[in-house]
Length: 452
Image (cartoon, rainbow, N blue to C red; front, side):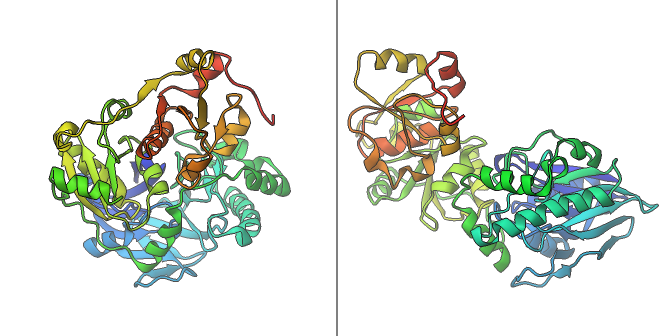
C-alpha cells in the first residue's frame, strides 16, 4: 500500500492518494483536481472513493467534482448539511475499497462532525490515520472557525479526540493531517514533515498537557485568520462549481486604465522591488509567491472583478490556479509583459525600497513614521519603539490612523509590507518599503521587547 502526498504549499495543506494494486482512494482533494487525476494516471489506478475529513474552511474542495469525473463514491461526515448526494459516514463505518480499508473515527474539535480515517493493512493492523484538522504534527487544528459560542466546547472536544486517537492506535501508526504545514487552520505552527502516534505522544500539546491547560493555552493563542474563510464552508456545503482554468482575456491599455479609475481590483504579480521601481498608478502589489493567495484572499472584496498584471502567461495561470482554490473565480482579464506598455504615456509611479539599516540612519535626522503591519501578537512579542501597529488585514479601514508625512512600512519579511506600501501609494501617500527581515532589526538593536 502506498500513500502519495499532494502538497498545496501556498495554503499549508495536503491531500492524499492511497493506492493498492489498481485501486485508489483520495482524501481531502483541493479544487484543482487535475493534479490528482494526473497522479492517478501515473500510478495506473482508478479512483473508487473520495473522502472528506470535514467541511473545509480554508479552501474550496475538489471532492465533488473529482467524484463526478471518476464515478467514485463521495464520502462526507454525517451531520454536515450539504446540498448534494454523498455517502454520509459516521463513527465506526468502514470505507471498503477492496485492498484499501479505512475506518471512520469521529474526532470533533476543528468542526462538530469531523471524521478521521484509520487505514488498515490486510491483517487489520492500523498503519496510518488521516486526521484532517484534528491531530496535526506537534499541534492541533484551531477550534474557533465556527464562532466564539462554540470555541470552548470544541476545544475540549479536540483534546478528547486527540486522546482517543492516541489511545486506540498503535505507536507506529503514521499520522497524515490535512492542515498544519502553514495553514491558518492550525492552532499553532506544526512541526516536522512526517510523524507517528509515538512521536505525537511526546510533542502534541493535547497529549503532553492536562485538559484545562491545553484548552486555556489554545484559546489564548488563537490569532486572526483570513477573512475569506467565511465563504469556504458555505461554498463547500452548497457544492462548488467545476473549476475553470481557462486563460483570462487580454485587456487593452485603455480598458486597463478604465478599470483602475473605476476602483476595480487590478493586481500586479511582479516582484515587490520591480513594482516599487515602476507601476501603474492605482494598482496593488501582490507578488506571486507562497503567501500570495492567503493575503489577496484576506484583503479581497468578495465577488469584485479582478484583473491580473504579470510578466508572462504562465505567471497569470499560476495566480489563477491559486485563486480558484479559495473560490475567487472573477478574474476578468489580464495584462502581460512590460508594464510601461500599459501606461499610455503616463509616468509610472514608484517608491523607495530600503532595509532596517537605512531606517536607523533616516530616523537619526528625519521626522518620519514607521508602520508595522504584522499581527498584534507579533508586535507584542517585540517591535520598533515608536512604530504604529496596524495589521495588514485592517489597514484598508484604518488608513486615517497612519501619521502624516513619509511612512516607512515593515513586516516580518517584506511581503506584507509590500502590499501595505502599495495600498498607501494608491492613496497618494509617500511610502518607503522596508524589504528586510525583522530579525535584521533585532540584530541591529533597533527593537524593544513588549509584554514578555
